Image 1 (tube, rainbow, N blue to C red):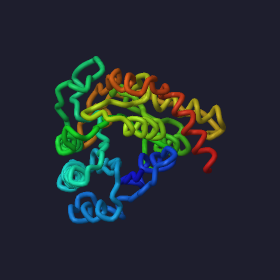
Image 2 (cartoon, helix red, strand yellow):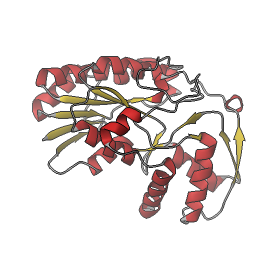
Image 3 (tube, rainbow, N blue to C red):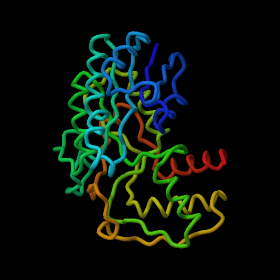
Image 4 (spheres, helix red, strand yellow):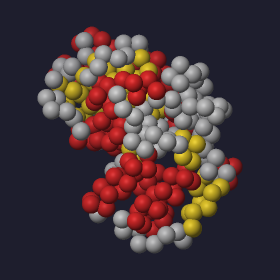
Amino acid sequence: MKALITGAGGQLGRALAASAPAGIQLIPLSSAQLDIGDRAAVDAAFKTSAPAIVINAAAFTKVDGAEEMSDLADRVNHLGVAHLAAAARRSGARLVHVSTDFVFDGLTSRPYGVDAPTEPLNIYGTSKLAGETAAGRDALTIRTSWLYSAYGNNFVATMLRLMRERPVVRVVDDQIGTPTSACSLANAIWKLAATDIVGVLHYSDSGVASWYDFAVAVMEEAVAIGLLDHSVEIIPIPSSEYPTPAKRPHFSVLDKSATIDALGHAPPHWRTSLRHVLEAIKTDE
């Protein structure tokens, strides 16, 4: 069975390619190879590859950058999804689209269900919510949160760099969510793609953390395996002391109960996944 992966050069795209089940004929296209914002290019890719499954891992993910580049964010996160959905419907392919916890405003203190009201706080979240609508009811949309991997630019890579450069690192402690390994998400996507489930599901690793908690865990686990040769002081700060162009939700934990039922098991705890990613980083260094 042919599976087209868009955004194949990104951290999720790489994880999807590495974890593809037996019997899958991969068609991995990076954003440089396929600009999903170009409808003609999308149509040509479908005509050439005739995929049975399309997993959209392409996205404009610069949350702060989207505030100034709203047209580009909309082109990829909204219009690009519309192009993929239209091509998938014409060809009879199954579309699996990846969205974000940032479609929520973070004003609650309970995990967000799949039917919870959406109210994004920033342009990135608004563009991703528009992409969910564009994907349509016949697609499977999977919202995830705080994605990272052993590759690319992400929170873990940033923390490791700062911890090597500075004796003290300050990290916000009033934004709560769940770190999610791209490998963990990729494995879940392949399993869910093999079902006939459509609509919206939530997937993240298990557990809850603040960015401060996440940073402390990165340091502790990295020191434990020798990826860092010393500990650093990590100071918790409120978001008000680290202003950003885009406002973030203070709470964006996702209710995964329907996904757990579909998979037949709970996701790994985020700290377990973090340990695996750090070990992979150490192996590659």
